[in-house]
Image (cartoon, helix red, strand yellow):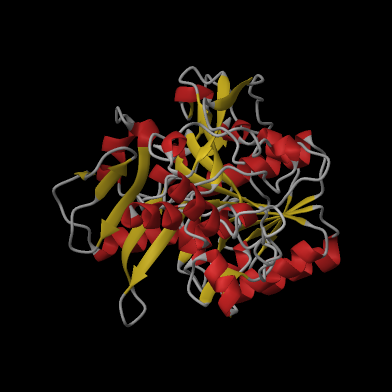
Amino acid sequence: APRAAAGVSGEAESLPELPVLEGLAGPEDPGTFKEDQGVIVRDDLDVLLQVLPPDVREPLAGHPNRAKLLEIVMDLGRRPEARFLGSSGGEFLREAEITHEDLRAAEAALGDFGGDNRAGIANTLHRISAIRNRRGDIVGLTCRVGRAVTGHVEMIRDLLDTENPNSILFLGRPGVGKTTVIREIARVLADEMKKRVVIVDTSNEIGGDGDVPHPAIGGARRMQVPDPAQQHRVMVEAVENHMPEVIIIDEIGTEAEAIACRTIAERGVTLVGTAHGQVLENLMKNPTLSDLVGGIHTVTLGDEEARQRGTRKSVQERKAPPTFPLLVEIRERSYWVAHWVQDSVDALLQNTCPIVQVRTRAQDGQQVHRQTRHYDCDDEDMYQVASLSTAPPDLGFDSAPAADDDAWGGAGGLSEVDALQELASMGYVGGGTDDRQQTSRGANGKNGNGKGKRAKGKANAHRNR
């Protein structure tokens, strides 16, 4: 019988005092400030401003929204523009347009641009990306502000501080803070949890530009990647040569990198990474990266099994165990959704809503709230029957989920005909105990009823009344 979903399963954790990062200035420094939810930020913005023309630099030096500056855009023949977090538009910094001389002066103040058209400033986390014309000349620069942040890791500290930590993959829209989060995770794992951590730093965005990594990564070691197309080779080299317990990778984006991640995971090394996409379904539908969550393939069912499942004979199933058992969607900086990947992928492939953990931070920054609830499926015909999770008990995915307004509507008043049809859709046929048949196991090793798909049985019952 499905577990009752009445009430909210949640808990709150008090946060420890935030550490002072060795090598970074203290709170009295103008480049260090405290955000909402108890997050401390160090931005080194004055160093980045020195790259800009003087009349572009001055409006930003004392700008009231300096702490929320996201990037400065300088395109040839256009006015320079500053973009801020939380603002839909930009702000022009001067009336005069950007000239070739402005771009050449900025280029001279930077390090060399790599094969990915990115450069940095030594001992900072800032990233400057170039736009080139067909002749290879720079005609535009995007100067992205890099910040060392302390406090975001408390959102998932319990997932890291376990005897056998699971690999974690972070998803989120550009600019939401994925790289910032894994940079702090590298420091916490290396300095506080005493792990051997190696960062594969494709564009020097995690550890900063220059040969000496930024203090924000703590004692973690950093391997630079000479050519972004060779990142997968550096990942495997890190495992073979440097004996890490944890490898951290930013922006997994190719099939070769996904395969390298699986190779590393199968050697018993924990992975922490980010990938392109905002929600889990993005990865499931991405043929290049779907292997990170187990891969998807089509199988053909027998007539009897298809009838018992109430599906077509050709269905999609998870192909293998996921490379990353845990996946976190960073919706906002203080609103994260955590998945136990194999449960969520199986449920979504069977048109049901998986059970997830929603993690939020209190406004005062002193507590992280964890709530077990149903995933926000858009399809109204999707229903979730709560069942035991395959996640380790200490992760909390098996707690009773919050009640959904429509998930159990009318369940207490089903007629006998409706109830029998619902049982049939769940894989039970016949009226007696001896005649009861459960669906055979699918290709993913789970029972055919999976999470207990209910939508089709309920819809059929209404049509047959």
